[in-house]
Length: 375
Image (cartoon, rainbow, N blue to C red):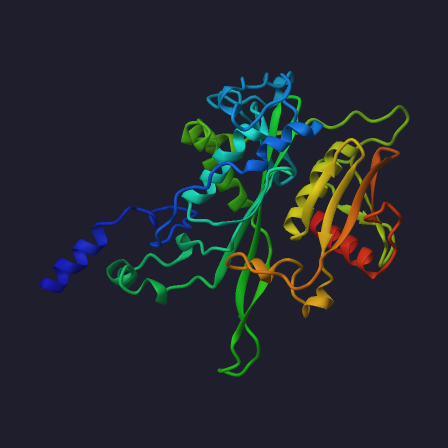
């Protein structure tokens, strides 16, 4: 009887985290108060890409900044989302919010911290923040034993997977574009022997997790839950860039990237610049490159890269940030990844930090990884 009562009590109580939830990264650990807005947030006003339409803004005055005007193209407007928009290009979706990046920055930090993540990278100057790797406990089995003893034996249950998310903010004339990209790892055995141990390896990104977090971010920013989910499901395509006179027609959204030659140091994306720029940014995020700066007008991403061969074939900047901040003893190499329009398409090349063409093994490795992500 007592056991039955215990079973009934344990299976009917709880916070409902495992009833239909797609993501749950919260733990029983005590979390500290959210960090204050970083002091260097005021430096954003010195860079043109972080300038709001009304002029210079500081972090102290961020709350008083009026919302930017909504985009003039109503083709991506969705009901019950206010002035926010969901835009789609192939399988990738992002948000267009009529507020400046420096206004959204502290809200995005709180969004991730409230979901159980620790931010291992916060760069307000480039508009990038990245979480630690955490377990999605919504994937754990929802059975009687776990419901009964899960709180006592929680550490015995493990999905064998960890997820990390990178958030990137880009200023536009209509406000801010918000991108969320997922990177996952999974635990695998090193060898066939029973006592061979395990290691972590990368697993494919999951666009459905990105969409789920985007819908929750929409709710955090003021949208109702059901319209937010509907918006992600029916997002309007991003408007394509206008091709130059006589240029080849743009490829449909989601077209694969074409590597010019085996072990090439350049690749061609069969799309105009605007789409290629967005897709390349997402590919860099998913490939675990660190984007230190970017100049859209010049078509340049300034990135850091660590040769996997120098790190014992580990992912660049990957294992050192697996479950939190640790020092990376390897000095990362800096490069420029350049996008240029070419006859209605876009060519991607790699340059040294000084702007000279890079044709070495690292350039080939960078192009190969980007081509894999772009496909």
